[in-house]
Image (cartoon, rainbow, N blue to C red; front, side, top):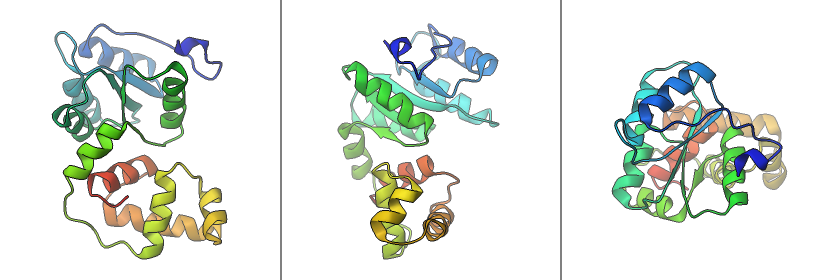
Amino acid sequence: MLGADPGIEVIGAAEDGAEALALIARDHPDVVLMDLRMPGVGGVEAIREQRRRGGEQPRLLVLTTYDTDREILGALEAGADGYLLKDARGEDLARAVHDLAAGRPVLVPAALAALTAQRGPRPALSDRESEVLRLVAEGCTNRAVARRLRIGEATVKTHLAHVYEKLGVGDRASAVRTAWEQGLV
């Protein structure tokens, strides 16, 4: 299904988490689709191991049938960048791959609900930082945020830098994931 999308090149498939980790190390994909329940090394364990490896990391999208809070939170805490259910339509799956490749998070409503229920202490973001972060969470580019808020792109970048610092993250996807985990967006 994904191979039919001209913007996506499928470069491998694995039977379990150990094989997935070996393929990631060998082929350096931009996005990895990972099931949670596999023989041997499971998805959460494979995600955790991949994140421990450091270096340039692929975006990790959990694609599974499981939508319980425990499963969702386990995958996201391990370092997944997105969570999608296997009953997603083909075009939604392809869009999710493109979104993750562009640094935008992908979460089904059940994942958002699980994160909202697990809110932790909230860093103090200014009103403008919160607005910028909310628009980024909606998938807006810096240019789109600047237009919507009627500010310059450099100002958007400054607000994002402050958000990253306050949330202790280094990129857009991590900022959005952390903001959702803490109930900020």
